[in-house]
Image (cartoon, rainbow, N blue to C red; front, side, top):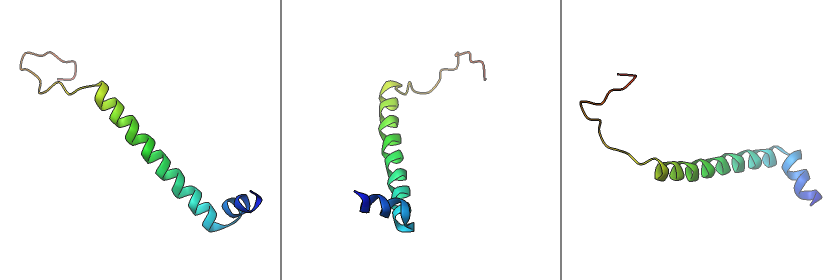
Length: 56
């Protein structure tokens, strides 16, 4: 374990590996959360002409 930690935190290559793994992990988490949100909030289609909205 000491060799692994010294590689990851003591060398540029190890730090780069940690950085890339972190980016990949956050990307996977973002994709999973986006899929869950997309299932929860279904697209309701285009607005009707009579819809009153605060921003219109």
